[in-house]
Amino acid sequence: MNDWPEGWSDDNRGPRYGRGSAGAQPEGARVMRQVRRGPAVPPGPRSAYGDPGPAAPPYGAGVPQQPSYVNGSGREEGAGYGDYDSGYNTGQVYGSPGGRGPGGPEGASTRAPRPAPNWRRRIKWTAITLATVLVVTSVATYFWADSKLRREVDLSTVIDRPGSGSGTNYLIVGSDSREGMSKEDEKKLHTGGAEGKRTDSMMILHVGDNGDTLISLPRDSDVVVPSYKGSTSGKVYPARGRHAKLNATYAEDGPTLLVRTIEANTGLHIDHYVEIGFQGFANIVDAVGGVEIDIDKGFKDKWSGADFEAGKQTLNGQQALAFVRTRHAFAASDLQRTKNQQKFLAALAHQVATPSTVLNPFKFYPTMGAGLDSLIVDKDMGLWDLASMFWAMKGVSGGDGTSMNMPISGSSGGNLVWDKAKVKTLVDQLNNDEKVTVSGN
Image (cartoon, rainbow, N blue to C red):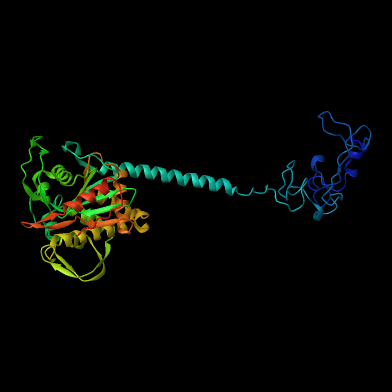
């Protein structure tokens, strides 16, 4: 006897696949009502679980109607194996919106479209990052460079100084210091091995609003040695009216006596002092990759090691040092040497300021390091002062300023005598920051 309701007997359930089935085909997949692929079923009474019940009337005697098994084409499943569709072969997750299967078109992607990149946001953060890196690098470079400055000259010990004028006056000194040089270096650079140090070149650079002026002071200039305070003893030595070559005052008591002598013989206040030795000068030239210069007339000098032909050429550190030191090859030895020094320093400033040096860290930092390691400056000198001096020298080389020798009126005992009238006019114009009209030798 069969206790199943009439609609549930084996005879009425159609062919089955598997145990107890006489059919050779699998049963059609049962499709849940919420994901059925056939036409939507109208809402009906809710079941005990709150989901909509079937809209059709009860099926059989007290037995609720079973959901029909419908494939995607709307046909009853089980008719054949080819119509079998379990719903799993599509990769569809039941209950998910869109994609293939219920809720989305056949063949549509199950992944949401990727949003377009926000280029404005990306550009903004890239700019912020680059600006941050630039600021951090600049600050680090500033403190690194500032720590390398050798502030060894105390101008506050100079006595009886003239008043400051308009603009800023730098005293730039090239000494024959052999500091840090080996015997091999001395031989290579033709410097000799003399003890102590003397000045091979002296220049005053005036930086003002009405044009910058670079004035060379011949080392053989005849000057009166004034009273001064000893840099080591602290003792004040009175003036005795004695005459000496300008570079001899440096050899006697160093930078402070040199500054005191220049101020006393000119009336011009020196604001800052900068000195560089042989080795440092050659290192800077090599670090920048050499300096191109146009030599008007070839010359040789066995004392400095100079051997140059006329024309444009790039000088390395050794050649550059020979070029600025040579004086025995010229009739007007000291005056021609100061002109060569000005010419080369202008070319060096121009070379250092090129983008190929400033924007290339492999050149910029070695050049900065070589220069700062060998520079001796006054205690009040800052990096901004040094930069101002450098750009002024570059401006003079570019024709934006005046380059000249101190006016000379003659000689006495082998020393060059300054033209006092012209020197006074020159100093007045510099102190008042006026355009220089005086010409030098």
